[in-house]
Amino acid sequence: MTVDTSSAGDAGVRAEAGELAVAAAVAAGEAVLSRRFGSAITLVSPEHLAGSGPATVVRARVVSSSFALPRTLVVKHYPDPPDPGAADPFAQEAVSYQLFTALAPDERMCPELLAHDGGHRVLVIEDLGRAPTLQDKLMARDSRAAERALLSWARSLGRLHASTASREADFNALLRRLGGPVRNDDGGLTRLAGEVEGLLAEFLDVPVPEAVHGRVAEAVAQARSAAFRAFSPVELASENNLVTGSGVRFLDFERGRVRTALVDAACLRLPFASGPGALALPAGMSEAMIAAWRAEVVEVWPSFADDAVLAEQLTLSELLHVWCMTRDLLPTLDLRRHAAPVSREAALVTWWRELARHAGYVRMTEIAEHSTRVAAALAARLGPHADLAYYPAFR
Image 1 (cartoon, rainbow, N blue to C red):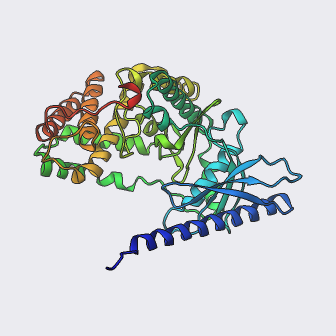
Image 2 (spheres, one colour):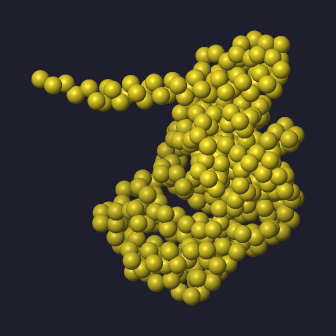
Image 3 (cartoon, one colour):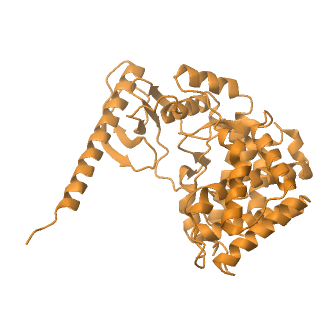
């Protein structure tokens, strides 16, 4: 009898590679800390913190020294350089943390940067401990705790925007100094209308009226506008937010950059839509989150005090968000079966329905009517009950 040991062998190789990556991260962290403080600093008891990005993330304990370092800290090591001309996630993250570490502690919506080094491609940041993530709160069964966490997230997002509203030049200068290209990642928006029009025709047989094209062009122009620009983490995934006693704190700035804050604010209407497990929030929750966000930014951008102005701008950003998600998702969905309430199919139906509802509120009739047609075409293929389920905390 022949025993297949390939799986066990592969697992062993992966484990060894993981151990080597952790050791390399610890060595890089020790090197940058020793250079930063002028004396050898040793890190022990490394704990590999799994993540989806290119960095090896390790929590380690600091051997006692004469320096005022915390007992534990987090090392993020990016061993591989980016492809030529591509955005560098190490540079994006290092500059993002530099930007916030320069602010007063009450304006810092993330861990403090303790040390970094471009040669070793490593960052050492404050360890915020084993606080639950926003995802943990949403997947638990305590609706009050989840509601508090969501409102804290919205307030923290507003404070993040307000504190960085005039810092674009600083961010870009720091990025150039670290060797990262200054990129706006908006190039794909030029082709958005044509791409989505083709997909809606191919998969749903729904045409796009010229008036809707005009609104999409308006949404793209708003996203590229110089108005309301502030720092954005870009990846606003629920697992990237820690719920601490001082409020929600943001993690993972590998795609961090400056853009119009309205793009982030649209995520309060379609929270965590980019994540594969995005679910729905109960009625009124998004409106409460937007109110919490607005309370933090209105002093910086007084025009947001006007309900009608803000609602129209948010709806344009929501339109852009839904179209981008449709471009990315529609070709990958199975439209031949009834949608489960926790599926991406149900999510897309729900987002188009929500866009139709919000467009109706601000009298964007052409958007409301077109979104209703798209949602109906999706529902006709996915079944009459293609509604996205609530997060467990709100069931």
